[in-house]
View (cartoon, helix red, strand yellow):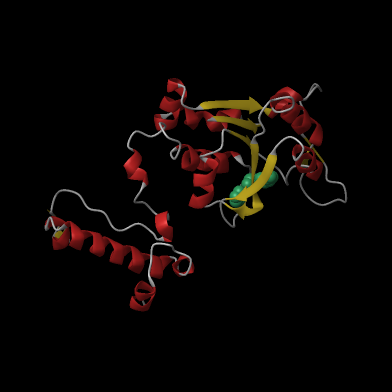
Length: 242
Ligand SMILES: COc1cccc(COC(=O)c2cn[nH]c2)c1
């Protein structure tokens, strides 16, 4: 998997040198490159933004640096990447999207700042890449870098060979559309709180159905919106939760 990140704050992406992602980069499983958008400016102040046409507060990212960055990275290449631009107005980023993006050969992440990127950049980029504006949630960050860190982690941990223990990816939140069940480890009793007996029973059938039940209850309590689309439940399950 190759991934490029275009940003005016390359140092914001330094955490991608750490832990499993960092190891995967050093092992060559992940070819992740960070680019400073200001390297694609030519004025003394390395300007990347300007005032918005039509007035209004704040600044807009100029199209020229983005155009040059995308031309340098993508134009003339044999393959065509998916360009992902995190933004409050994007499509929701979900585990399903992470799984789908983990199968792509090449991702380019564009980190917006200020009030956004000149719209013509998205239009131009559509000739070079599949463009997706993606939202992490209904809130506003100062820029896309934090969102890219989250998306890179969510995607790259699903890329074969990046994370050691593949089966740990199977049972987790949002697999099958349900939230994860509660987990416990030693000691069996802690400050008067005991691990549920079923988990100490060794009866794997009972444990599996207890865990499924807990996922249902937790999803019904915290994310009822997921219940009707979850693939992991039956109509009997739906009847059984409040
Ligand atoms: C594309 O232009 C901009 C402008 C400003 C901030 C950002 C960063 O993204 C978010 O704020 C966000 C992402 N998901 N939820 C919120 C991008």
